[in-house]
Amino acid sequence: MNTGALDGIRIVDLTTVLMGPLATRMLGDHGADVIRVESPTGDSTRNGLPARNQGMSGFSLNLQRNKRSLSIDLKSTHGHEVMMKLIASADALVTNMRSQALKRLGLDEQELTTKFPELIYCRANGFGSGGPYRDKAAYDDAIQAASGLSGLIGSAQGKPGYVPAVIADKVTGLHIVQAVMAALLFKERTGKGQHIEVPMFETMVTFNLVEHLRGPVFEPSEGPFGYERLLSKSRNPVETSDGFMCILPYTDQNYKDFFTYISSPELADDQRFQDHNSRIEHTDELYQLIADAAVEHTTQEWLDFCDERSIPAAAVLDLKNVHLDPHLSEVNLMNLVKHPSEGMYKYVRDPVEYSESPTELRFHAPRLGEHTKELLAELGYDKKDIEELIANGAVVSE
Image (cartoon, rainbow, N blue to C red; front, side, top):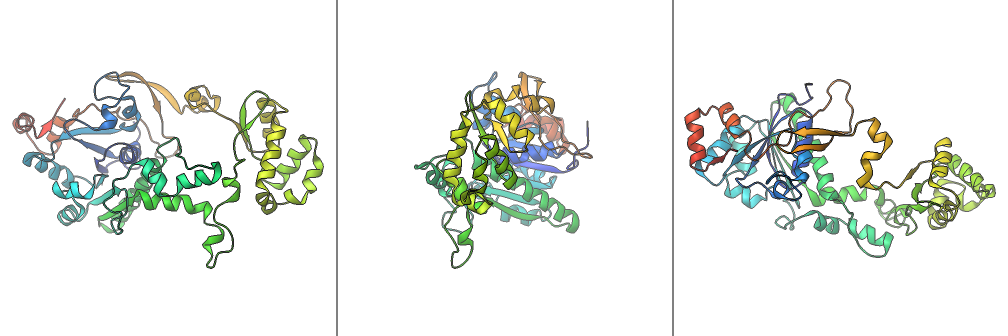
């Protein structure tokens, strides 16, 4: 087993659903000792379907890997005491519980950062605590709408819509990882912990503005809002003679080669397509031209030509067939592994390659309370104390 970059770091994972668990899984992939604190019944991702056994959904098998499970009734006096001991042993706590619930449990940032000044306390929430939306409930679809992402889809397609992925959860999860990593480095340099807030709404607004705040970045504005190419109603995969694909000439040379291939070399001198800015201005016409040409060849013929001339291109992948992709098979992105209780499943590894601190599968997703006894012993409880905690319902062990 390799030593990850975060070996020796303990993270208390008080998160649910997807955003927080994704972030803590990534920290676990890097070698952190991630302790997943769960209620006595588990959350919706653990208890969802499909599943082979209760509490071990397919959703959770990759999401909860590289973690240990400690099931605590945080509302009980003895359960709270266990939680305090666990936090005292940790470098960081990550949570996406709402502030009111945390305060009722005595686990809010003010309480814990005062008691444990070296603790990194990272709370992800729907909306930043400094604004009027602070107490609003938030799930992915609501944030897609509120952040302008659904509106961007409407600008391109004529009607607002949702990305068919929990993109706000996943993007915010990545920001949680970045924030905790930065705070760990700061703590190593200064010895100081800190409180971090990662709001979904603000995170997604900044994410959406990166390419679309162009002309209006100036005051007064120097152009319309939005990146024209991305908002074009013609920006879609094109139909070939036998399928669908992306064909995306980008550089001047790409377009010269493309126009020659479709037997229209004179278009390279057309003022509409002579340079990048001209092509952006005439995006709809250009995309229609590509679409009209695409049907004249098979997908493989286009791929052969585009690869030869370094033109970005790809066949549309049906995600359910991802395991058949030859490149992904060669790099072993997805592997069949055996879970101790759930049998064979598809393990999707961390896609990043590290020369000195590689990530790896150290633990399969735990069953609810699988490590309760083990962790209580690490915290100094003896066998009798552990049995009493289980008997009075303060903790749950499988």
